[in-house]
Length: 454
Image (cartoon, rainbow, N blue to C red; front, side):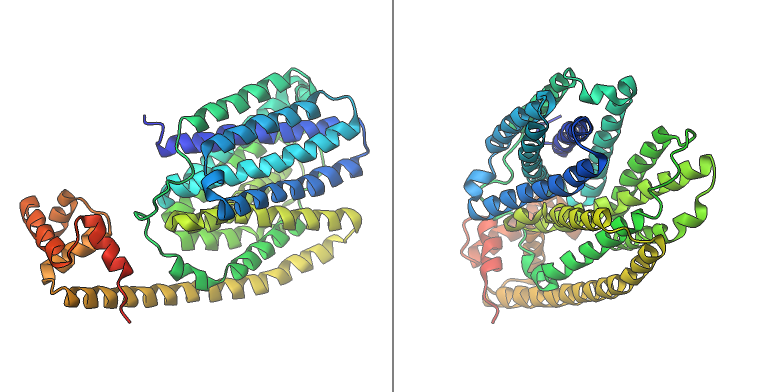
């Protein structure tokens, strides 16, 4: 298997998430020996999440302003090495302050890692496989972290020995990273520029949709995450539910983006019915398991909705971590509010229900706008092609072949599509190049892309 295969990029996500997710949990457990539960919640659910968001912002800004630096795999490897130093400090120090500060710096690194590997997902894993690839990799990391927590009744996560495992995981990630490609090549001429068809969808609107989803998820989760901590709750089964949810959500999202989005919105309604399902014994395991499974949908959503931008146009790769960054910020501040202000369950349920109204309205508006723009772009592209072919006096067959070249088809693929021989394809391509005064097929396609149809 080539080390530029999408499997290798999925492996980076899986191993890196297993490393960072486990180290994150270790820090939380270690803090419990120095601070009270409320302080630990404040650090882990608010401040650390903001540090991760800051790391993603640093990466996105760097990739936008200095792509020649931030696209390099060696920089990713360097951050992995420097972050491991602070991870080790948070694991080995006997000072609460040192654990907190080193943990903040490590979480900024985690945010940068998110930026790097989501950009790799955006660039090197085809859109039709991105959801399942990320879902499987994330499920691997999540289940792996839970397996660590089972060792020695959870005490292994705070043992100094686990630092060695984290260093090995970081080293493995570095090795995989260095064996693959940079985030994107210097020449992006082979990438179809469809950003024009997406920029009018308003990233702000998408950000608002995601923010409302996170509000429903975070506030609604308070209704069913605080289940009775009875001995018969099967946490192994619950983690299996989450892993399955991630994989199923990724599969659906790959098959049909629109259906995946609708399923994500539908999954959020579980918080409104969970309370009626809470009972005794195995019922609690099923309710909590389903809640985790449904959370898999929003996890896939906020990653894929933004990595698609970079998948369509290399210039927009910097947007890849935006969904996760927004979710971290919203979740951090809502968690802070819920920690500071006790809100009755009835009010949480009411807030959750009301949020569905603007969410559905914005979703419908965005999807309708998208369909209209796709039609508009298609008409515009057809008009450009017609005027271009008219200018250079291309025949109908040469026009068909030019369209195939724009799609990046090979001679064999063109021959199969048009039911002609490869020699006939080459004959028409030769005539096409002469008429358009192009020295190569790439030049001819670029001439069409640059053609001013106004």
